Length: 147
Image (tube, rainbow, N blue to C red; front, side, top):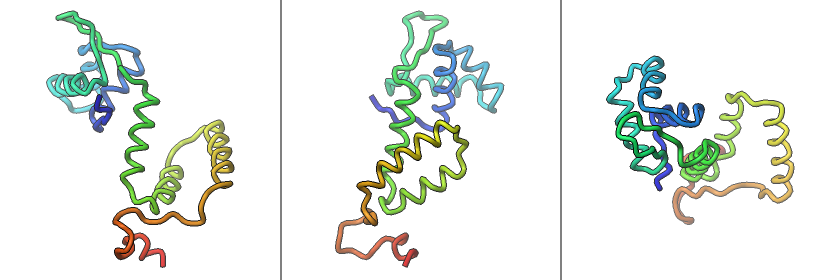
C-alpha cells in the first residue's frame, strides 16, 4: 500500500473519515461546493486512492460506498514522519517550532507535548548533525547561516 496522500487526496479522505463512509455523489456534492473542482476531478482522485489501497468500496456497480482502509491518525503520522525524515536533521527542530507556533493546540495537546519534551530532554544530544550529505563534505547552508 502506498500511503502517500496528495493535497487534493487529503480533501477526499477528510470527507470519508468524517462521514465514516461515503458515496461518490456525497463526496462530489461536498467538495464541489467547497472547491472549483468538476465531478470528474473528484472521481479521478477517488480512483487514485483506490489504486493506492487507501480507500476501498463495496462491490455495488452503482452507488458504491467508499471507506478508508487506514485511520486518519495513521495517515497523519505517516505523512508527518515522512516529511520530517526528508528534511535536514539539523533543521527539523526549528521547523517544528515554527509549525507549532502557527498551529492551534488544545490544552491537552500542549500538556502532552510538554511531557514528551521533558522526557526527550533527558537523553537529547546538545546538537543534531546535518545529514544532507555524507560526512567530510562542506556543512549544509543552514549550518553555515547559524555560524
